[in-house]
Length: 98
Image 1 (cartoon, rainbow, N blue to C red):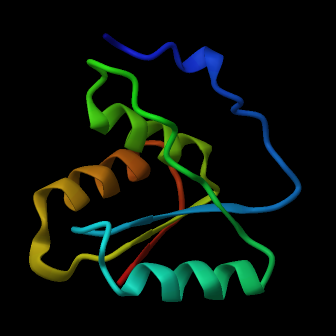
Image 2 (cartoon, one colour; image 1 turned 30 degrees about the vertical axis):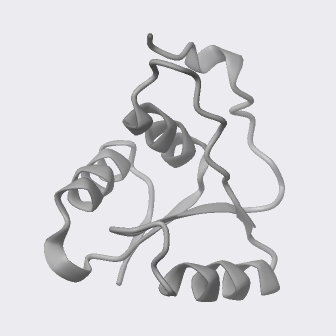
């Protein structure tokens, strides 16, 4: 069942927001990047709670839409990360490739 993206708060905030895209949520790089960006005033965009039957990719897309900058770990050339980077580029979001 698709998510109604209009239900999500997409307004701009004064605090720049970011998403870290990695091949694995347990990637040790994530806390380092998150802590560093929070130290300089950035706010992470959390993934919303999953509703039954909604594909996970939709939650990732919403997080990318909400973010002001995307940080992507390309280690291992993971296809999911590549897709998400392409989605961010299509939205003309700045992407930092690691």
